[in-house]
Length: 223
Image 1 (cartoon, rainbow, N blue to C red):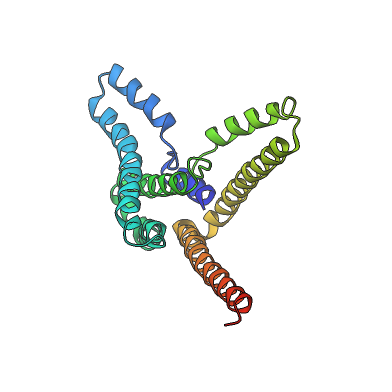
Image 2 (cartoon, rainbow, N blue to C red):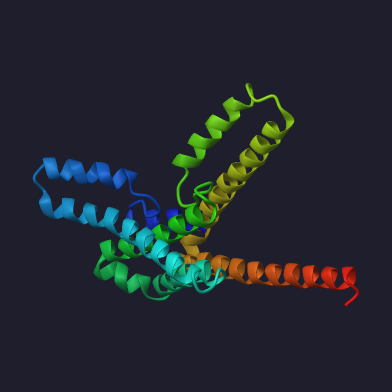
């Protein structure tokens, strides 16, 4: 999903919309050139990604006290809604204010990055690849030094996870680039659908696990 958003955002507004590293460099550059208005626009790129992360974490903290299932469903619903709205009305927004279009995508990506980071205990990030390639490089080097089976198994599992995320980011970007030429911003609806399908799948999987567990307990105790 992040791969799709990354490519579509870049093709639409020629800006990165899944991370803010480059925007910070542009922000500093514009400030040194005394282009304060343009610098402020780049600052808002950074701010909306941060604000999305803040909102996501706030929702998780509030809802976790009420329901463990709601603490990730609500941010995903918000993110999906933003993508669907941009798919439907993004062309008008893009023609009127391209920056606002980019801010919306950055806010959505901030939501997602914070959510995944929180629920994975900072093991996984999905909106950009810098941290993933850094962690992958570290873990591949550790294979030369960690010899115990449990350590190697843990490393292999982590490396597999990171390679999976990188692969799907690449496939999402490839899909977004191919479909953008024909579907334009409606490609974002596909990204939203991926999120919604993921929530439905996760909910069904959880229900099956609970039913199986209850069934096994009933058989064990003869109920």
